[in-house]
Length: 581
Image 1 (cartoon, rainbow, N blue to C red):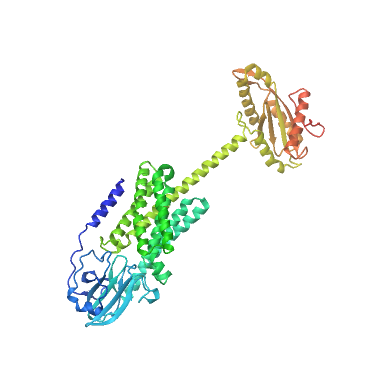
Image 2 (spheres, rainbow, N blue to C red):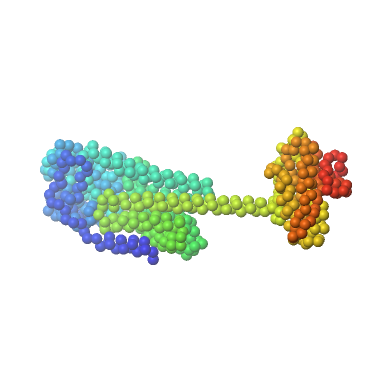
């Protein structure tokens, strides 16, 4: 098992055995003219309500039964019963307008009572089960405005929820609450903006690169966004009125979609079907189970507890399998795996903290409430780097394929012995050059045949003949311009293409230059030998406008030169008859 998994399990063990919270302070909670929110936890006392039937009058009569909570700070964990919380206040502030906030959006129902001199002077109901417009304040968290003149007061809260009862309770001056909550909204907005940017980027890259790994990453981001929209309260505040019925399942739906996308993403990004087929099958099975649970819940076959149970049971499996494989591949030098370890490591810490908080094992403060969200951002950063590396790999593969294709094309168009263009290469070059040939600036096409090559080949052998052909190619290139083309048709026949010659006389001059270059002997296999040239040429468009016709005229002129004594140059104009066929 990997070191990170051991650390995660050790962290879980430690969290499970943390001692309960330290003792509270005594006395009422002072509300003075100081700045900033005031944490109510030091003054909170609680009373369990297993029957869920106690009224405000009942709990006021049983005031002596309220006791100090023996739980982690602000965290009562999962409970089937309802609980009552009492917060005594001593107000010395000159500002009577305050806001009571319970900063845990998933809580289903909170009944708040303000008691002054034993009388209920304000009552409000909050919670995710209410329509957004029916809540006292349409805010991300549960909040209600209170009038608190100087003196002694008591706040009673009845809390029940199908999720964990997490109650970070704060009191804000009314004008301070706006600024405080604006900062929280700005932070959440930045996080969601970053997530949406990653989502759009992954979709665009997936479409342009046609790589399904980007779509899997996008599915994970959709799931993460759904979870945090619901968990943070932003969805209920801005997007939908009700957080009940089907919409109550938004959080577990997001978790199921996220683990489905993440499982598939890990399989693709780490190339697990090839490198770890058994783990790939396991993660694909988790993805299939997650997708099946999502669809079943969507069609009402699973209720909220069953959907949440499916997400809870399936959630740790991709973490363990992906961490194990990431660490294994990272040790083998995989760059992608290293960032996977970072991403999954951060996600593991956040997920364990979230699970520990929901089970009541962790105190609740800003860090523990948002650790999972922050760790998910680190994970997304790491996985964007994974996708960037994948883009680099795709680009390199494309460049390699293009180079291989270019090499194959070059091989198909190049003479293997001399490195000159072959018949295909010549045809391609002529096809590109002939449309630009003009009568005032014609293209000259020469057909060259070696005189005396067969005798050298027979006397010195085929290897020497091949060496001679290579030297012939070099000598022809040496006497021509860089823009001119030399090609080998096969055997001892060569073709030279000169675009933009000034005239027939100029073409004859170049041909003579090639003839003169062969007056010097060649040294082949340690022996001196002489070969000459017989050249026929044609001009385009004067003698023809297509390659086949020009080559036939040049061939006819070269053949006439052979019959006329060799080692000469002839033009294949209209006066030269074309050979049949």
